[in-house]
Image 1 (cartoon, rainbow, N blue to C red):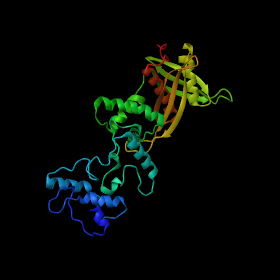
Image 2: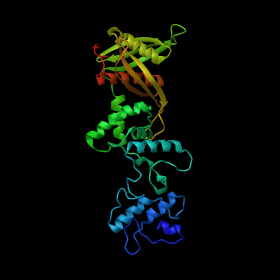
Image 3: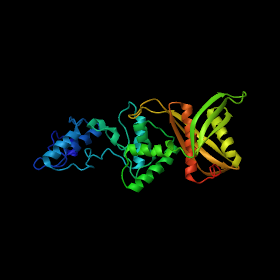
Image 4: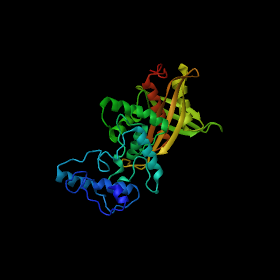
Length: 321
């Protein structure tokens, strides 16, 4: 039918979704949207395609397959990690330009579909799809290395259940992995003051909980983060010939999303346990979310340390009560 139109035909008889008898079996939906992707206006409007599908299924008592061209419920859905990553980057780069997104020849809005269903996560998915859903649904953007670390957590869930996971389940896993960890360390409160010398800009005093014991730490540094790290090392770890180092610090505003109720900062750090100058165990990311940027990053440090402790591949906490 497309070749006939290219040859000059001005009329095509067909049906909807391949179900027809004397009209011919060419699907007018497929034909029209195929032309549409090539920049040819078929002069057929399908912005209420879901309603068209509902009427056709009612009249014919035949279900439109979920992967039917252009109309199936899964046609605009990506499960593969590489596909999800390409779609995520394409949508981010789109702006106000002409529609050009990998694996999506047409804008789903043109046929009454939404972006929300484009990326769904199962055992085939990678870090790109997981990161996309966290950012669009909950406004949480993570560095790429952190995305890779967290994707392993989600992968274990999908492998165990054999099912697709929803954005809410991903968000719950994120909280369990990074935010809800309060053992063995948790931040109670802190206060900052000017440093004791020109080279030391900040003096910080914090109350933290170590297991069931509340203790006070003090530290100095060129900022609140370095002062906090110094205080933790001096009080908790240096007496046992251990310490930790912090790297990959970033802090961004939580992006606009459906679930965001107020302005918050998302702070990410990565910490490494050290023993006598040598690395011990793997590096772990920590994340903190708070309206105050400083509080968010201090919580992120605690999150990273608690994740080091739960990993069990270092002796950072072995001497603590």
